[in-house]
Image (cartoon, rainbow, N blue to C red; front, side):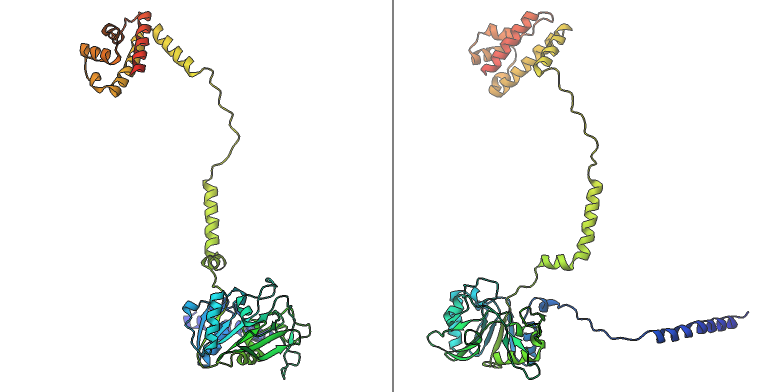
Length: 392
């Protein structure tokens, strides 16, 4: 069979098998488009006002985002706007005085009441300076009439408040009921201060709204993705819109390094941890049966020394015992009187006798080795050497 004929048969076989399979696949499968919404990444994962900042930048405004209110790094100018998503009760009194002076020169400050769940009896220095009282007030939804959404509600999760303007301030707009409010716009000098029960409508990340009625159309707080929320946000930002810098204090911190390592780096550290545990298990000491306690010694140290001395005496090794005591004495003498220890013979005897105030005959006797079998002389010389050593 030629090569050309062989390849022709292979191509025909593939066509006979592939064409029916392709027809079967196209008739039994349908193409469907599915959109998968990924979780926010980067700054959008921890900054609730990230979408608002991007929208304002797209509108040509200058926007600065800050995790916390830090007036030393925020050069506020008349015409600027500060959106303070941070808990207003955490603003210290010196910062409150600085903010009030800036608003009086033409700034626009947007604050919210302390979140529900914190100390219900605390207003904080900022709200006290504005004459706003939110202590003890609860939270429930406020109707917001929208043409396409007649059941729209807002401020379901925020703490309501009452306002009694401080000296030099006046209420321009208010929204709520006769007993409590969810929004108030105060006039202070050439600037404005907006107090809101909640700023959930400004945030870009949707979240469930547990306080909304079951039949409410906005049971999910969609933030700026909702048209009504965009309109409400534009109304709140209106006083200084397009005049200066928008400062967005989002009251959040980016995830720490350890948080990222734990939640995002587990494909790396989990295998390494398992490998480390396996290596430790391999290198660990294996524990077998319990070993019996060693046998206790049947003799004390003194008994061993006495037995060793008697053994040397029995076999005629008495000079070894004398030499050991004499070396101990000479070692002490070298430490106490090096000049006397450096002498030899009669000169050493005289120096030691003068040092100890003994007679030369007694020192000579102690330093003279006894006979091999003179046990009495050995004991006498050892006794003298010990006495001489103790007197040095």
